[in-house]
Image (cartoon, rainbow, N blue to C red):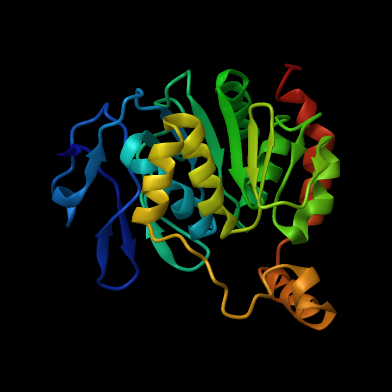
Length: 278
């Protein structure tokens, strides 16, 4: 059965475009001034709706967030978390609106999720945000990430002693956080679920949906999304791309001008202050 969900959060393209996206929690009144609010739907399932806290930050990689959110939003209460509720810009220029501050976030989440993106270098050195992640992660049923969001989890001390995945270009950095790198689309180790780079967020989202709502619901969602990837060039990982394309892709990634290696090394040295052992 389909019912209109009362609360929504918009994603606004720079320029003149606005579209409804990125689900919301059930705790606040709906903002019906957003264009398209009436099309935000909620699907009923046999299981309770899980509470999913998704961290946002300026400079996040849009698909890291939107891929999982697209798979999970209809059957979950999603909290889009940032330090404030001001508009922020993703790394590709899309404008996003958080709906929950850390203080407003439920204390006990079913899922804690962190995306990646160049802006995470500031998150990885932000004591208040890392303490927040460590706190919520210590009680969440599942602690999760996509792409280099795994490094943020690591900085909060949440991956020590776990197998984890991340973008292929950042796999070696997981060692700074006491994690064991695994080069797979989705890596599951106990209650940690970490996705590979960017597009792996769809695989991640569907796998998490299976855990939360059962295989049948996840299969229906996969079909509804027409998720049947057939990469036009089939060069999405270095072993398929070869050294020349890989070198060019690394240079492309480094074009962000951030020091991810130095940030990971420094964050790894500090991570133990944010969390205690399981």
